[in-house]
Amino acid sequence: MPLPLNSFYYIRHGQSESNAARIMAGCGIDTPLTEMGRQQARDAAQVLARLDIKPQYICYSPLLRAAETAEIINDVLDLPMMAIADLREHFVGDWEGMPWEVVAKLWEDGGDPPNGETFDDFYLRVKSAMQSALVQPAPLVVAHGGVWQAIKSLYAPANYFELDNAVPHHFEPVPEHAMYPWRIHKLSLCAVSGDLLREEKEFSKKID
Image 1 (cartoon, rainbow, N blue to C red):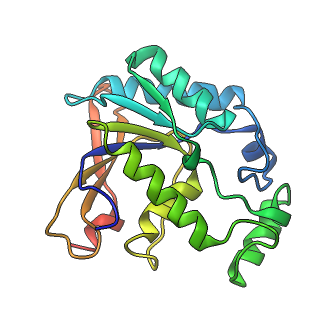
Image 2 (cartoon, one colour):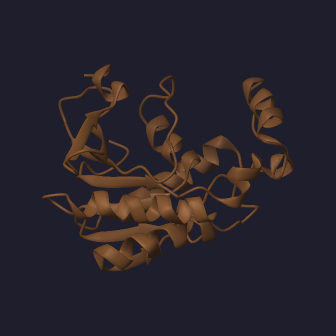
């Protein structure tokens, strides 16, 4: 298997300035969180604090938007932390700083980003990073949307779903899944009762 079958939590960074501006930012552009992004991280910390089985460790991308998200979450969880350089977002070369709408069309055309990191190299880098992270017991991985897609593409490249900013997900090992050996649950709090909610993602339902 590409990755150790250990339970882990994953969260994309909160809204960054580049997200708000709708520009492409891989690891070539490093922008901080917006105030909304900081609040999203604080909200995520409250979700994670309600878990019966909490993360034991935080592994995070050293890019500012992810590091800041990890630090805000850890103000509540108070866990050991480790930066993993290979959790950085995909370096997309000439596409860095371009409007999202333009990049989306280029992406549909296929091929690697010009003067950037090839998809194969990016996926190998993420695989190495996750292998390092999963040595830790039940880690929380704080990284990027592209890293999320790379993890899934190690197993099932045809499947895709968007990952919102600062929404925790739990990856539960399910070795009998032939294609994708985790069941994925989105974690949130009920707006009325404050109870922890676990919503299984359709992605993992469809690949039993």
